[in-house]
Length: 383
Image (tube, rainbow, N blue to C red; front, side):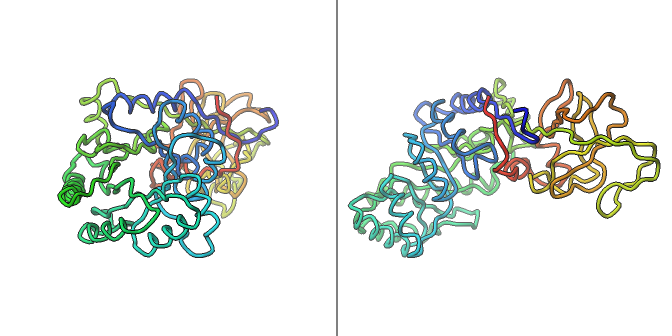
């Protein structure tokens, strides 16, 4: 680690703890999909998938074919499902054939794509396992409920396809007021009832995300999809007290810490400008530390003159604009800072802590974005 200037440390025990917290919430009959999409929300796709599979996840969820095939190459045994999209053009024949051969579960929401997948599976002498996505109110990807019964009847006539799952996505699951979530659940349930009356029973039904799993038992069906909270981050802010009342024992452990090192220390005289655009002028004789971290690494430019980092257990404010690869922090009130000293961007140092939520608040976003946008090329150490 001594040759690394910027790196992340991911706590295996925290990831396992968070998964087991959700296992404790849900019924033993309910399956749990560990969502590792988008490089496991910045935590590292392959290693997190391995940890979750070993810890008891029943399924693994990814965003696209690239992630699905990357997991399949590792020899993981649990079913892998593409949750969002894949290229259904003729140019994607190779990857789609490979995915079908390896048993990757694919989302479906239009008949043209279903026919295309059927033809690929037929030529490969394999069965393509599909999950039909229903738009119950989020107005993103998905077939409309009013069209879904007819869609499914047509789909079931196509060769080499197995409709394994029915799923949807919730638009307002984090809201302590579950009115809209219940409306979506009602829509989903009504479709299932219509299908069952016509003798169509789709084995897997999944709707719940991290927030819904905690706040709304109706959303469970027979599988839940847990994403951001597996990494120790709450998607719910306003509803935390409600969670504590319902599950007093429930808590999450943030798994990610982000570090860099001081690469230069210098003293500036009063009135000296710092950084691009001259956005900060030293109000006193100031000592700064220069850090090899910037927006290319995922340290948001909007943190300029807003955020703190931790050095020797103390807060050092960012001064001037965050650059592409460099940031400057004020260490005037911190003694004995030297080149090579560790700097905490996210995580604990002594009694002080900087969280993804703190950074998210400063730049007007959510904790998801803070961690997911950390550059995937940065080294991640699993401890």
